[in-house]
Length: 569
Image 1 (cartoon, rainbow, N blue to C red):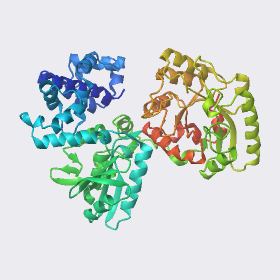
Image 2: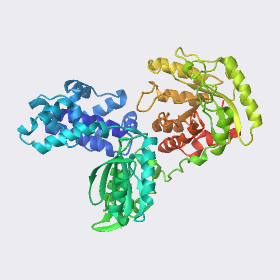
Image 3: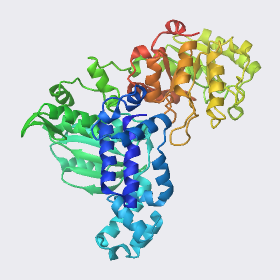
Image 4: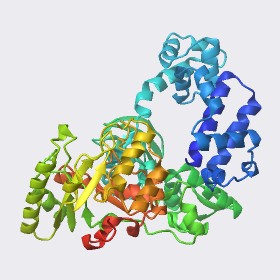
């Protein structure tokens, strides 16, 4: 659990207490505590594990320290759970409205007895809010518009979708004669799994031309706001994008600021203060004098730091690398030599063995494993033992006839709900590459999930656990796994683990991938391609690995097949 996640408990606690009209000093204590936790460099989970005295942190007393321990150890906070039961969900939802804070929500709920967004909108449309002191017609209209926009502004988008839109717009703006530099910032540049909105920075000799070009872009449906140097638009898929035109001398500082994360930037600002400097989106200043800001590298160097790749800017790993004196050379897309998870028409793929091999060759790959589904996945025409052995004979035939790439006999074998594997060992042992996966029964209790995983990890013919949690981002949570036990078992038994590169999976996530690295487990980045075009998602697996701080050496399939086999059981 990250520090920011623990801090979120205290921020929510403060919000709910303020809605209830609790003691202001108590509320302030929780908010100050949250800020302290967000800016603390050392991981709180580690502090708790090592029995560190949390009261040594600024603003953290015995009460907050006790709550931090409870959150880390149980993932829950009893007081917060009780408050959630007392304050209706519809009331809490009001905090999502731009410009509406806990004090106003307190008024809506306790004075007007409004407990849902729908009821609040009706009250605003009926003019009931303007009758209250401190509210007026403008506030009512702002609330109506804010509620109308919530469905759009609170959506999350897959990185793949958001990045595709942002890159196209950015590329088109770069073509303008007046635009010198243009770059996507925000969580999209940090390659987060999902993106809420987009930020785009440009330097331009004519800000009006850049804004006109954006307003008239084919991917833009509406201009929401426009000023001299900033414009906000809504794109055709519903995501909102902010364009900022910044001076050349501030471009690096602005790019750093708007890339984030907030937690990373807080550390940089405090580091600047320690050197009697001031850092903001306009630059790094000594008094009123600009001392750095044209490039990100310039800002980091002035703060006695090396440039940090955007994927690492979460105040999680990056400053530890800095303290160790070395920023790792993160894995690159070009480092990957093989793909060991894909499907053909033998199960639910759309292309033949030959077509997948040719597509892989065009991507520069040296080896692939054909891993169609086992029989449990009936909806995907999964293979039983007899069909699989025949399928493997065909793979051998195609491999002999194909030059320039090795084609391996593989299978994606289900770990069944009863803790057994979907295929017998006497079949699995004939394969070159065996993946074991959880597809069904993901809601089983942790004990049973772990039993199933241990069956696969300990099996001598299983080489890798694919998409370990089985999650689908924005759609389905993963299985309840004791990740430390799972990874330790994989390390002990020489079983590799996967980062599934499909943007709806990205499983392992970056935290678990970093934990796998600590245990010395080689990670395999695979596409799970079901068509030749499916290979194109590999870059998202690379982004996930980079967010975990992984290098080329941490990834198994950056090696040749001969080298990879030395890592396998």
